[in-house]
Image (cartoon, rainbow, N blue to C red; front, side, top):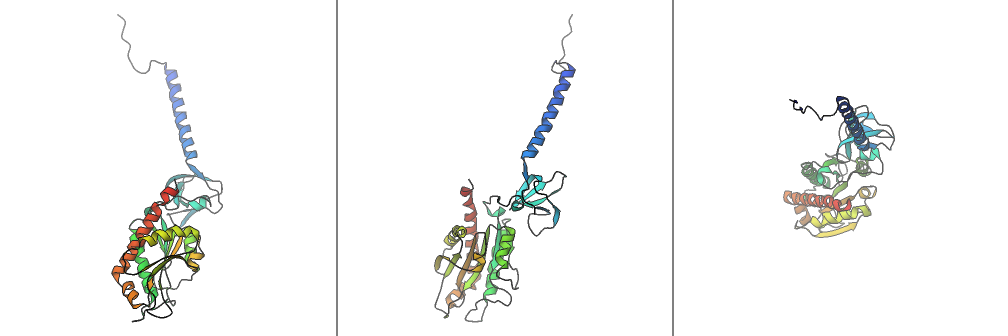
Length: 292
């Protein structure tokens, strides 16, 4: 009687099966290498460096060469975590790879924001009528509160000053340019030549690329107790000598007794900060349509 055939394989000769296996492995290797190649970016600048973290403040690991290819593993803010051909891993900024390329940012968790508390140190700013309270202490308080709120959303936040120190006007926008910020917010409080003759808050911008940010943030200011004087062009150095979208907020007249009652209250401060936060959130959400 004829023995039944067993099904130990495809019935193909062993030599053919081995050949197919080799071809399969070679195709897999080729596919992986093709994926890695096309999943790479080419360094198009001569100043790219690997950093230990996603920010200019982190230590440098090594220099990258122009035309060198790197594999992108993930991205955060304007930074990419990459691997080089010699298996070094680190963070490189999008502008270091290609000076004209910028990763899209559509939410606060991926944004980089510079907050500028006006004045500081021997530059006290304007003063209130009673108790001679100085503008610099309130700009810092508002800036710190906004920074705290943004950081809870994993926003990358830089403060031009974090204590009562003097920072030159030119260094403030320079920081935003250095970190390639997505937005620059400067806090100030107005003062009129004659006390108690002016009231309200104003949102200033200078460059056209800042108008949308100014309009969206200003629109969020609701019932905060003072008149909204709207959006205006302001020729202030910190929002003029800057490439990134930038606004300057004059959140009331410090030498108006009525305004100062609001400025110095924790409720007003929290409300203003929350409104700015909501404005920033909507501003970045609106970038989704721009990037489509």
